[in-house]
Length: 155
Image (cartoon, rainbow, N blue to C red):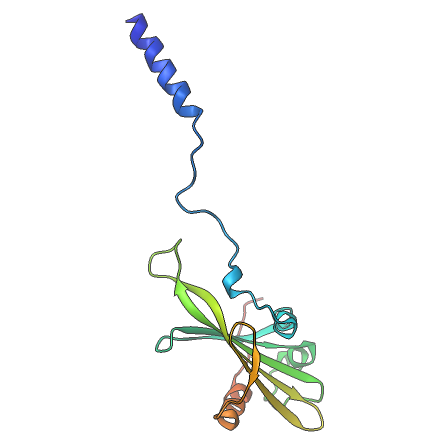
């Protein structure tokens, strides 16, 4: 009886001494982090709205600078004043390893920047490195971005 107890204690102590690695390691989603400075600056802006396109498997977030945020807080239309900058970042989705059936952003697909000054300028970037490109649907993309309302967030 005493030897069984000693063996049980030895097995318990041996099990406690092993390094157990978690099945899923915590990680920072570096694949979704933009490498371009302008995109990183947009992430510091105010979230206007967010979208999921289930057909293209993308997720997008529409950001605005402080001028846009102050303008939209009053519930005004989307005729942005001078100095407004609106940025739409779009990521490819990937399945979330921590949540069955969930999706998280993966690699950056595109960035669309609209500057409102004396004239409105629309710039389109694509790919992880956000290289300047031509969007054949620039007019409709600009109209779509401008039509987005600020999401309602409880205070």
